[in-house]
Length: 335
Image (cartoon, rainbow, N blue to C red; front, side, top):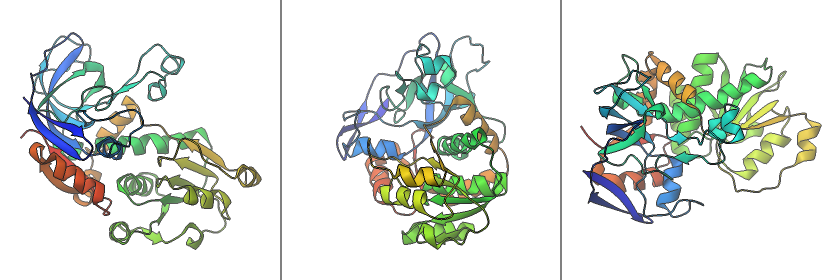
């Protein structure tokens, strides 16, 4: 079978490799589509702190089961499935408490485990979800970023929120999906902050009000919630110090491991700051249900930028790396 191997930074080779053998507790998946994620790009650039080339990347994958043994999930050959890339150890305190996304020994498909830029992959059965009727595979290729959104918005349930005003900083794929989810599912009024002209145009096309800076947003008589998707310290500083300050700031952007934060201003405004780490299998299942509703057409029509073949993996990653449009690059591994 063919794999797209990142042999060194900015370089792919399409190689022939032995097909994976069926192992107990696993299924063999014919990968059909695999999205390109920002974390994949960090490896591609050689900047990921833990994973370096050579590596077979890809974790935003959907496909069809070609081999599987007996299983309690009643999955069978021919089922369309999505991959849950996070594999918890089941032994650490976080796993025991029901937070596998915070597992201290976690492995992730496409990073510590061979990824899905391959015609076939072996995936633990418990790391698969069956796609609902009416959810096709191209639409399902957006499930992974949508699951990130489901998870981070769900964190608001920890705090009693009364406001209907939300700020999203950064109109990339995740930011756009958060905005759509807040608006369409929760009925919130969403203000976007984005300085890139292409991303600003896309957000406005979808119907969002887009501002150059946080202080430009005309919010009065309430404290909004905010979702920080840029990973830019200056943006986070502005969220913490603006007035009226967001009551809750959920952080999704990838920051440096340590940074200075104005704790005095945060305490003065009594703001909550919540970190968000990936998602769980349950979040992916909720995302799959959403993608079987009419909302799927909105997501697919605005977010799928272009579909590349496996042999075009380098072109796909270069497009994802250099694109400023906020849309999604998808690789079609098999037809």
